[in-house]
Image 1 (cartoon, helix red, strand yellow):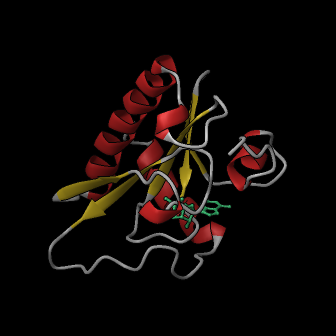
Image 2 (spheres, helix red, strand yellow):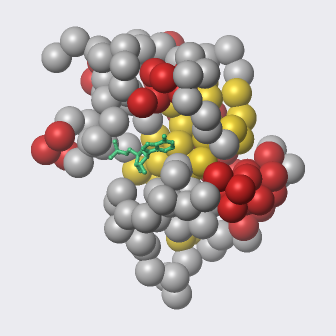
Length: 138
Ligand code: AMP
C-alpha cells in the first residue's frame, strides 16, 4: 500500500491539524495521544513518510528510537511512573489504525489498569497540563 499523504499524522506534521507537542527535532515529533491509555501517553513519529516500521529507513528508525528513549525517560521522571510500556503496531492485523509509523510511550503502574486502545478522547487543555510536566523533564 502506498503512503497516504492525508493520514492524520501527516496532517499533524504539516501543521494542518493541531497536536499537543512534547518534543520536536529535525527528524522526529512527539505529541500527546488524544485517546490516552494512561495519563502521560505520548506518540513519537519520524518526519520521514513511512507507513510502518518495515517501510522506514535505517536512519529514520535510529532517529525515532532515540527520541522514543528520550521521551520515555522524561515521562517516567515527570509522572514518577514505576514502569514504561513502549508499543509499536505494524499493519491492520496487528492493530495499527494510523498509517504513519509511530511508537507509543505509556506509563505503567500495576495498580492502575491500562485503558483500552482508542478509547475516550481527552481535552487538549487537560493533555497540555501533562505535556508541561513532560517537557519540563526532558
Ligand atoms: P495505532 O493503533 O498504533 O495506529 O495508534 C494510533 C494512535 O493514534 C491511537 O492511540 C490514537 O488514540 C492516536 N490518535 C489518533 N488521532 C490522533 C490525533 N489527532 N492526535 C493524537 N493522537 C491521535
